[in-house]
Length: 135
Image (cartoon, rainbow, N blue to C red; front, side):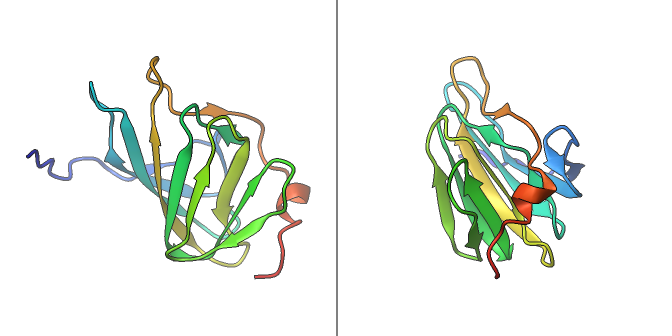
């Protein structure tokens, strides 16, 4: 058993990865031979990730608020507390808060052999984001 006392600070989400104001709390960092990386990600209303993929897929678990997620070419889905979303390896997608609600999710994924967990793409446009269904 290993207990790691909370020693990391909440960090702002980088503007290269997110639109809007996002905060990240690290939950797990990979250390050989383990590959799990996890974070609690806090999105302010309207904030969202850029398009991105994960080499080994990703699971998000919504803990509070109302969010949106989309895989490229599919409709935007509304997600709520207790919902789990699995994105397949290499599946281009984004996720974030609804326009008028905060949303927090736990993001879990495994790094690849090079230690990478994600490949970031272009930002989700306002037009793409505004195509969300009524919540």
